[in-house]
Amino acid sequence: MELESFIGPRFVQLRSDLSERTRMKWTQTHVAEATGLTLNQVTRLESSSGPMTAFMKLCLFYYAWGYDINWIMVPDNENMPMVRPSEEEMEPSDQVEAEYEAYLESLTPKFPKLPRFSKLPKLFK
Image (cartoon, rainbow, N blue to C red; front, side, top):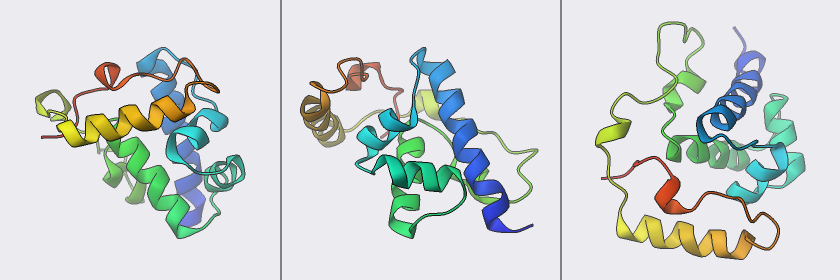
């Protein structure tokens, strides 16, 4: 199985699942703004093309929401959980919280409904 044949559709599936989990519609534009990627980069990655740095940013964005990066990368992920099982036990660090809040402040005029750090799943120890 070619890497390109399944990575893009998995990003689409993750964005859809994130919308359901957060009860907020995550469009490609929202994901682009939240990750610092361009809309074109997100679109290309969801179409299984795009530069490696953009790919890593998108992986880390979903990782920050509690998704298991292995689920994206492994060709046969049928028996793998999409969400990391230990998500509830993880605590956010003060530095991550401060950086995320500062980043959100810069986006608030464009996207006032982006979730505040306190609304994010507890992800970091």
